[in-house]
Length: 175
Image: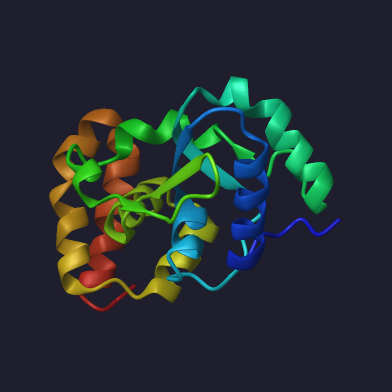
């Protein structure tokens, strides 16, 4: 079982899931999965984080597991773990969503790069910082992220300060 998901495997898995579904379903993908699907990150990911789904993720679990079995994926290849971070998204993120072509009954939306960057900067995990280095954010993207700091500071002061320091390093060429 290959535990990584590159763009090709994600598209195959979504096509298989869309063929299994009995009703129209929409999911919003964030994190590395969104960047891989948009072709902006070439590394594979170990899972694909769903920020929201209609119907909710609980009702999709049997079909998600069936796709995992059929495609040789780990059972949690598509999961709702990212939903706990939805409040980190900028308030206007929906205006930047990108819709992939439908996969049968499955509609997949992905976050815009700058919204994923905000989430990755705020999370600050080593793999997130490595992804940011590969993405080489533009000055406009870095300023956008900086503009989110006051709001993020109210969510988690320590993470927002760490994000501010990291942004300062990137903006001033020390990151």
